[in-house]
Amino acid sequence: MSAPSAARPLRAGARPAPAPAPEPRLRLVRAPQQARARVPFVLLCMGVLGAALLSALLLTTQTAQLAFRSYDLSSELSRLQQDQKDLTARMDAASSPEQLAAAARALGMVPADGTGWIRLSDGTVSGDPQPAGAAG
Image (tube, rainbow, N blue to C red; front, side, top):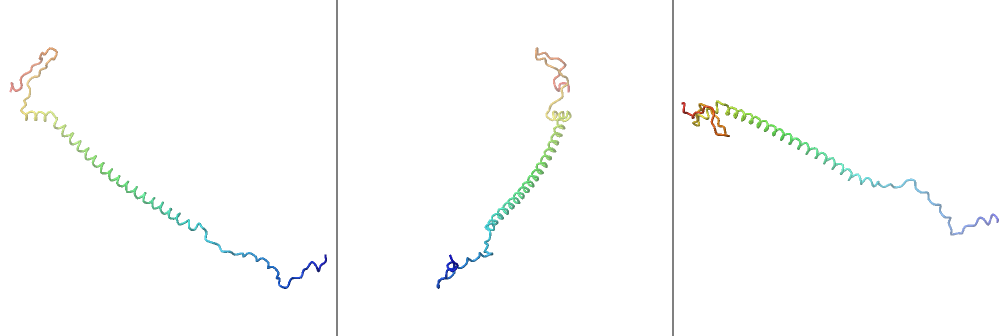
């Protein structure tokens, strides 16, 4: 094969095929899909933070209420303890022998002059019993 036959003449209407264009080095980049996913995350974080702050506020308020209730109850307990001491002192004063004797005289009772004992097994009386008011 000879050299002239290797190179074919081009037809009159034919053009050579264009070389493929090189790919452009720069291309359009779209915004990442994650940018839209941040908004719900931020809202969730704000909601959690708000719930935590509200919980802290409620716990603080509840603690303060319990402290006031505890103070009120301890004050009432102190008052009731003082009342108990006062009533015990009054009862002790009223049950003293002098007070019992005065209360008995106010009811018309008189002191006994003698004492006697009854033996229940045989019904005998021992001692020197006297009727009340017989001597006076």
